[in-house]
Amino acid sequence: MKYLKIVLPGAASLIMATGVTNFAAASTSGQDNRVEWKQAMELKLPEKSKDFAYSLDGKYAFVLTESSQVLIYDQNGVLQGRIPVDAGVSDIAIAPMGQFLYLLDNNKNFLSALVVDFIVDINTADSPFKGAADAPVTVAVFSDFE
Image (cartoon, rainbow, N blue to C red; front, side, top):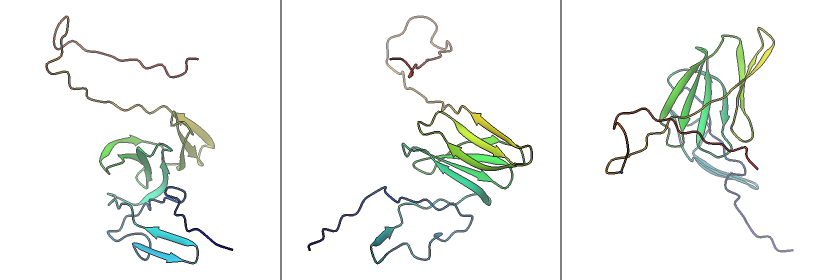
């Protein structure tokens, strides 16, 4: 019987949430039996973490900290923002399509769902416009139509 070695990228992609400067695994790459790994990234967190969630599209990492905040990082490791949460929040999760951030509060026995939107700057330099140049603009995106 002949075997073909295939490495499935993303099938077991892990980002270790750690508060230390060294990589969370014992080594940055290696192989054991039929498992192979290589460090893809490393992110120094400003404080200890309690839980971690990663968006399925790979764009954002959500880290629940011991100081009751959810830190949101983009795929380049840049902090996008912080969401304050109650001290009882012990676990977080992301909805499959990324539309909700779930917070589990064991002190109050609550499960909460937050809608998280990201503000994007759009360069409109040298673009034609009508009206005041500094007028506020809101763009609404409807993704639930048939």
